[in-house]
Length: 250
Image 1 (cartoon, rainbow, N blue to C red):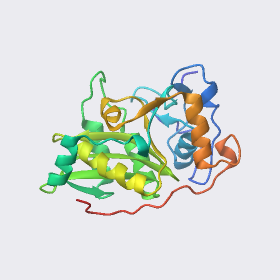
Image 2: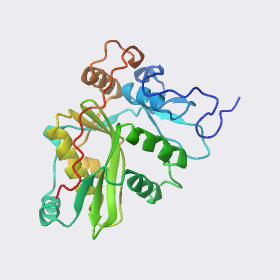
Image 3: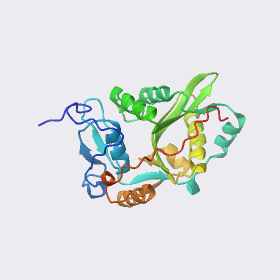
Image 4: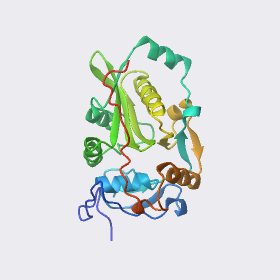
């Protein structure tokens, strides 16, 4: 029996207060894929992130849940900003805001052409799902502006003291980097223990992101979120975390 393309409409819609137990990702035989199917409802997405997974699929596929091995993380002590980017930030080339245009960032990320990718994984269903997560207070964005034009940005989810980075885009040179630097600086000053970069990218490596074996990542994730048990299903606390939505930062 083949699974439907995209979210499964017959799968129960989970509110942000409900959870689903995935198979333990550290025991998955595949180096990334852990499960297929389900939907992108708030409870399903929170279940995934709390258990070390995230959705990543194309329009002609069912929802695919990934937990890469290794995982790439950025810790505050490793966070590095190049001299050239420090200069760009100091010059105020871009105005950076938080949560001013979350949908615009989502659409920007979905439209950017990326090497070795024939299309986008940020489908209409993904945009709708993460917009709902934003309205519920879980998902956040940082925007880079130039002359009131959105020229870059990044977005992700904050659960307690972890930020799960999802994607970034630039229409002007270094715009997304500027947005990420200000975002990361804010997060680390607000007691975020690490930023989950998910998979390797040159951008994140340049900021100091490092690889961690999946089994070690899952252990760190559970410890940081302070689960009462080994599975997120047993712990449904609100980990929205504090968020200072400063409109204009630089």
